[in-house]
Image 1: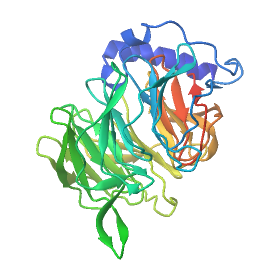
Image 2 (image 1 turned 90 degrees about the vertical axis):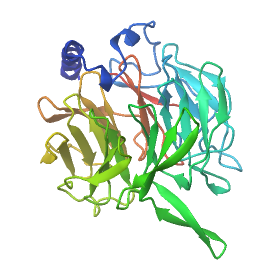
Image 3 (image 1 turned 60 degrees about the horizontal axis):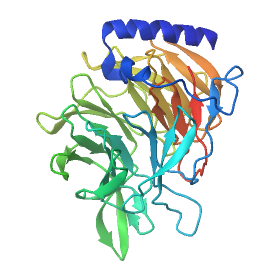
Amino acid sequence: MKNVLQWSCLMWGAASLLGCGEAGPAREEMGAHAPLATLSQAETTSPWSTTAPMQVERASTPPIALNSGLVLFAGGHTRGSSYFTTTSELYDPFTNTWQSTGGTTGMRARGAAVKLASGKVLMVGGNNDQGMVSSAEVYDPDTGTWSGVGNMSMRRWEHRATLLQSGKVLVTGGEVIRRHEYGYDVHENATSAELYDPATGGFSFAGNIGHDTRLSTPVLLYSGEVLLVSGNTQRVAVYNPDTNSWRAVASIPTSRSGYSTGDNVTATRLYSGTVLVVGGPTVDLYDPYNDQWTAAAPMNHPRLGHTATLLYSGQVLVTGGGVAQSEVYDPYTNTWTVVGIAPNTAKDNTAALLQSGQVLVFGAVFDYQSTASIFTP
């Protein structure tokens, strides 16, 4: 781990000189706060530690890092008769403490959330005790309150939300409800996308993608386009926000359909602009400049339903997916290094990069947790 840390420090200095600020928070933000508080597990024995317990045990909701350095947890599943909560709380990684903030406007889990250019947070879709929802709401960290905005055209869950360079948000993937038959909602795999405009608070149609995108993962390219990689087919598409349209690009070489039982791959844009796709027994690299795929070194432990987080060093932390050991990918040497056993190894976990360069990893679907895990590079 010492070698990983030394390499991380070296490459962060190189990244700063090269002006790679788009890939992570500004260096100035990292130094704007006091050192992190000591956590519950000694960092001398493992790169992993555990936070103090949160106020409400929850699952099925992603952590969102705010501009202040705090981390927002909102809604999700919880124990009890309804299995949902409208509570929200903020984690302070500098003091290892939690505080309550405004509750959501309604119950929601398994939706998508993204920080907007304004610093506010959009939470959209998901499900509640009545089924899938099309509603959306925005959290204002300055006031600590949530407010409703427009609805999507279709109810959708298990989807993704990607912030575009324009400040709009692209919603892709998941399942949708298009019709009602014999008294039941009919779930279908999503084949189209929607676009949220924070200036109007409304959603609009963002084109037909042309194939099943339920288990798909989007990633913003340096060009401003969005690459959408499927987790259960080899088809790949790119969204052009200037034309509000999709086009097919080179298919991913390796199919993961036989390996996956319903889990997403991950797609991470590296500092070079190349995209690292991880999932199943293989790892692939996509070159958007030449529309070409190449094989990367395989992980030590194949996984699906994991998280992948770009570190300040340019390396990528991969954790969870039902595998105890976490790994770091080094794109400069095309190698993987095992970096210890994470407290949370669940599938479909979520993660947020902190201003300190640490990574907060949290829960999964119906995997109720009162703490989060912290990785220190």
